[in-house]
Length: 92
Image 1 (cartoon, rainbow, N blue to C red):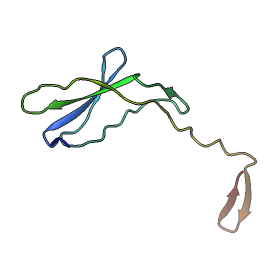
Image 2: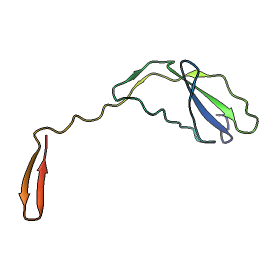
Image 3: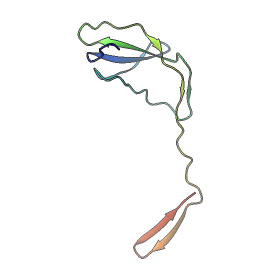
Image 4: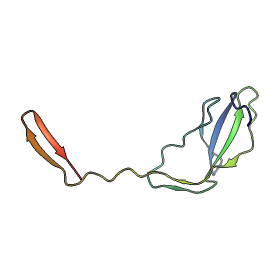
């Protein structure tokens, strides 16, 4: 495995626009801002490494596809039962 301590990950969208640049030496960079349930296909994003000293960048490769997790359904059948100092709230 290559020594990546002096490199950063760079993620691009499929048009070639830089989406995010990671932290030097960190081997994980997050793609954020996508709506829950969004399906991303192989190659919608590309990743490369950039050397912090030379500024040289590796070849870009496809990020594998993924589906963004959905948020839980909103609460339903919400009830509030008064107590002596507030309420007990329940939902399904």
